[in-house]
Image (cartoon, rainbow, N blue to C red; front, side, top):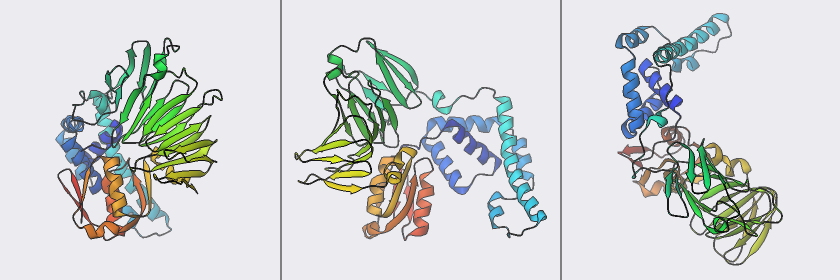
Amino acid sequence: MIILKESSNYIQSLIISKLAGLITEEESLYLEQLIREDEAVKREWERLSGQFPKEKLDHYKELDWMDPTLIASLPQRNNVRTLLIRKLAVAASVLVIIGLGAFYLINHKTDQSIAAAAPAAPKDKKVIELKLANGQVINLTQRQDSIRVADVSLSNVNKTLSFSAANTTKKEESVSLNSLTVPIGMDYHVELADGTEVWMNSATSLQFPFAFNGKTREITINGEGYMKVAQDAAKPFLVHTPQGTVQVLGTEFNINSYDSGIVKVSLVQGAVNFKASSGKKVSLKPGMEAVYNGGNDIELQSFDADKVLAWRLGRYYFNQATLEEITAVLPRWFGIEVVMDNPTIGKEQFTGMLNRNRPITAFLGNLKKTTKIDYYFDKDVLHFK
């Protein structure tokens, strides 16, 4: 199972909250899951637990703090005394975390991130992988600020790959394709040689050269990506998918080919032409989306940019989506196996948002509250019943 990406600061705040006894049930379950399945988080838990003296923790827990979860349920009375109680309750809750956090910071002046301290990922772990045209494979999940490959200098910083070539006039660099693969549960950003930017969603692959020296600029994508294409009227930009090709001069658009046999091209600004594998061709205007499912025709429709592009913020919106449709998204976003114990619930519908930056249990809780769907975990498998 792939653990959700979380910053080291967030993980440390979860651990400190648990040590202080102020963690929510949902957050506690999520932290326990992280500790159980991620060695780096487990080591951080053991390290922080050992740094807080037991008497310090007992001292904080013995204080008569008001439970923060009860604050919202207090009667809404408009008087100074009630307002003061509310402020003190919140302040008290925060004080515990600040106290423990300060103790940690005083005794550890250097903050090393969990990710940086983690050893190299085993081969069976999902990683962002760059396979060069010469066959060399580079693990981009590991921190590698600068990587030198022949005449090309690669930079891998803040989930972004950029590069520069010492000699970009070499013809072979414009035809030799490198392959970048982003696994489930992750995303990544690439800056191409011409300045074009590609934001890749999870379970997406991209093929590209280190230089565009021909009459066109061509890449291939399979999955989902958002592209901001650098303008160059003399060199059309071509994006190939399994179902067709998008031709642009300079524009921003989203392309989705997750579903087998279906491709969606959503134009944000500029203009693009989409040519399907059937030979059918259409031109798009901003705000329009082309949907091709392998037939003879291409469907044109308007689209909601907030929903279509929400994945870039780690969000996915469901509008009366069936559980069958939801279970197609969860494995791709969280790297978990999903099983429906009762097939009849597959048609149950749900409207709401999935946030990849939050524990999956937050989404499952909302799903359970608003539908007849229930769930449970059996090891690494999520079951719906």
